[in-house]
Each structure stands twice: as C-alpha cells, then as structure tokens.
Amino acid sequence: MKQKYNLKKLIFYISIFFTVFIPVVIVGLTTWNLYNSKVNLLIHNQTQVLRQVNLEVGEFMEKISKISTYIQANYPDNNSILKSIVDVNDNISTIIILDEKGSINDFYSHENLNIFKGFDYSNKRYFKEIIKGKEYFWSDLFLSTINEEQSLSYSFKINKQVAIIFIKLSDL
Image (cartoon, rainbow, N blue to C red; front, side):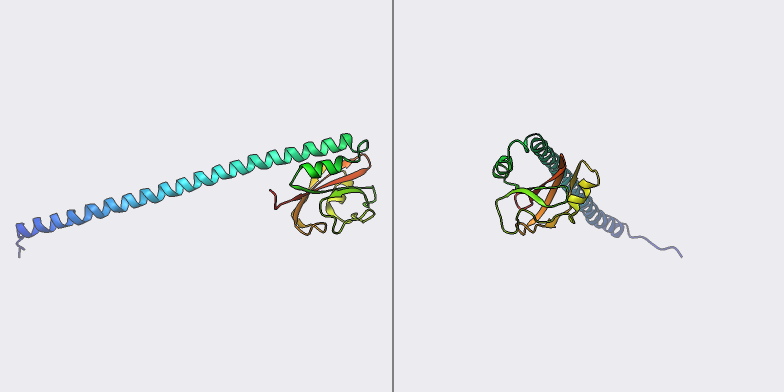
C-alpha cells in the first residue's frame, strides 16, 4: 500500500524545519566561534603577561648580578658600600659578608632583629654551594630569620669570603 503524502503538510514541515534548524545552527556556530575567540584572547593575554614577567625577571637578575660585581670590586676598600646598596635598593633587605668558616664578618640590614656579627651560617645552603665552587647561587624561597619575611638570596664569592644578598619578595 502506498502512503499518500499531503503536499501542504510536507511543505509546512519542511518550512518549520528550516525555520527552526537554520537559526539554531547559526546560533550554535556563533557561540562556538565566540568561545574560541575568547579562549584565544586569554591565551594571548597570558602569553604577553608571561613574556613581560620573563623580561622583568631577567632585568632584575641582571641588576642583582651587577650589584654583586660592584660589591666584589669595591667592598674591601669601602665598608659603607653595604649600607649604600641596601638603602638605595628597596627590594634588598640585607647584605651579609661571611668568612670562610661561615660566620658573619660584616652586614647591613634595615631590620636588625636577629642578626649579629659572629652568627654561624655555615649550615645554610647558600653558603655551602659557594664553598663547593659555584660562582653564584640563587636560593629557593625561604622564611628569613633576619626580618621574618619570605625571601630569596643571591650568594657569591668575594676573595675568601662569601657575600649574600637577601631579597624581599614583598617589594617585587
């Protein structure tokens, strides 16, 4: 038995189908396109921020390296150099000079809470790494015993002594 098709109904259903289907597809594609553009925009913005942070970190590391070179060249002749460097650079909280045994020989800090000449720093990693022969050493984050804040340290050798620059993270 053949089924009879009503042409009016068929045209009606096809027109309803296309009237509903095409806008739904267009809305779906537009939503997908907007979503992808937002994701791409976020990726682009995050990449730009990471590039900027990378650039600023590189500049900061270069600045600390230049400060260490300056200290190496001028420290024995000028003892007030430590005070000058700490006073001029807000992100440097303390500079310590250790003798070959790891005891504090000289220092300057804005916060003289827990630091005295003669303190033994020989068990600290930033001292041990320089004694092992490294030219310089960047430490991991740690809670400074001097000012009780999160800090980084940069240590380097001055003749037979070891200098340590403590960097406050709150000012970076």
